[in-house]
Image 1: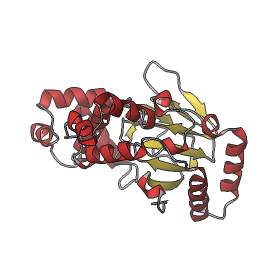
Image 2: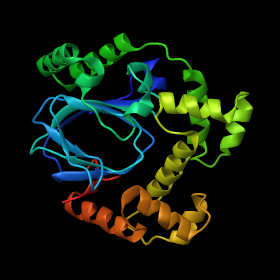
Image 3: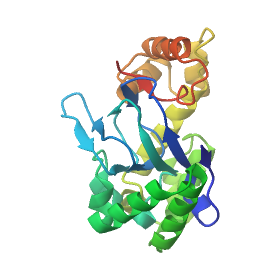
Image 4: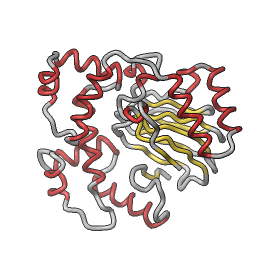
Length: 276
């Protein structure tokens, strides 16, 4: 179950969601994406590994993830249960007590962001709710209560929206010129509120648009797809693809086809990749 929150949260959040039931795979890889995440865990702990050379960490109360620049591997219990938020890239900043750059590619517990007492009360209230609708209503109200003004938000939101609208195909220098500020100032604000530079955000939007243009059930013309996505050539696209997923484009399609075969119509099919 998911829903879009009311204003002003709608300008910061794509959706609030409730997740319960058997995970399609014990481990799923999430490629870098133009989004931030808040997960409040109500079931058994889950694990997150941020790279092949990093040990997985366990999260009992949930986690907060600013926009990632590298793959994240999620290890799920047999029956996960959680509520969460898919933030727009800039949307998490008004709920943090530190610059987003400090958390880049470093998932932290919800307790580390909001404190032990607040998180314990939040989880208790969610667990006691009558059902998913009431859970999401309570979470929405909690976010409204915690929302605070953030310096530079309108600048970052506007320029990020331009990047999103063009799927990353925009001159970054023109963004700062159009806003009447220096590129250094724009980059600093992006790192404070999103955790990454405008250029990195544009790369991620471009990659995401290319991935969602792939239909794994049909043959793929990689050269045409690369050009339409704004890549210099197919080799550049392939290099970027491996950097974001650890897979070649062909390997990626094979993994997606496996997901389709084994879990047809599953809500998670369009993005996470099985790692089992």
